[in-house]
Image 1 (cartoon, helix red, strand yellow):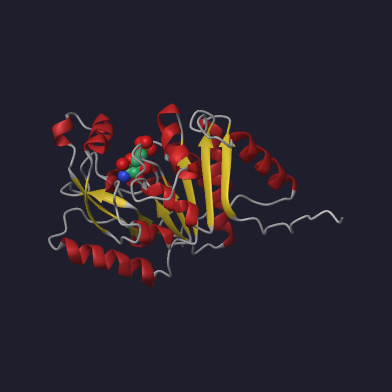
Image 2 (image 1 turned 45 degrees about the horizontal axis):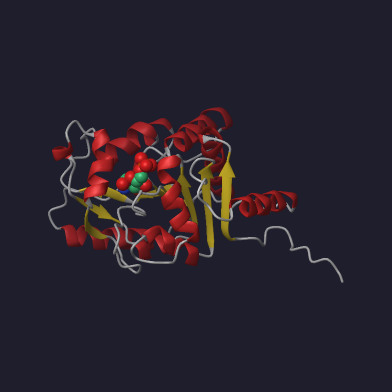
Length: 275
Ligand code: GLP
């Protein structure tokens, strides 16, 4: 029987890429983003906050400085923002993005979009955000972190899997998890404005990052659990083109861990780029 070898570049679907450590994870993620930006300089990127993408952003800044990675025509949409925090509040996602990425690359501020958590008419803010994504031609590559309760953006458990940009009430667990960035837990906003699960699923490509032992359970539920609104990241199993880049610790509970590693080895032999 003739041996079947899939043609290079045909292999999409879900790629699970297990990296040695956080540094390698950050490099791998930045390379995926850089490849996207180089192949389409007018790329529309969906961006995420949280501690996980920090290393990726540092690596993108390095690539901009040392390799001339050009963001001048890139458009960005952030996933979410806390309600009630002004853009210059130290814990606002606006401030996070400007401090950790935008102020250090050549992005055009006119092309940066982050939901406005101070909007007077929040419904209109949500509708306009969706419309702006549509006007930009949709998101080419969406970067995601992963909440311990399975949230992507701020789509907490029981979020409709078809949901659009809207206001979400944060779970107690999320408030506690995010309290580490605030002086007191009482200061953590209880509400956020977030792209919906449906909004995220419309991105052409998705890149989800998770690092550390504390994410191992969530990673397992994302990749190997049932698709359920109880755990919104699990819906990514239905996306046609998703790369999940994790470190060894975050991969520790995966049932098919060695299979994923084997598949990636083979994909590299076949020259199939991740995402
Ligand atoms: C917040 C953000 C998410 C992020 C999550 C995980 O809740 N809204 O987008 O993925 O935190 O954060 P970390 O990467 O710090 O674990």
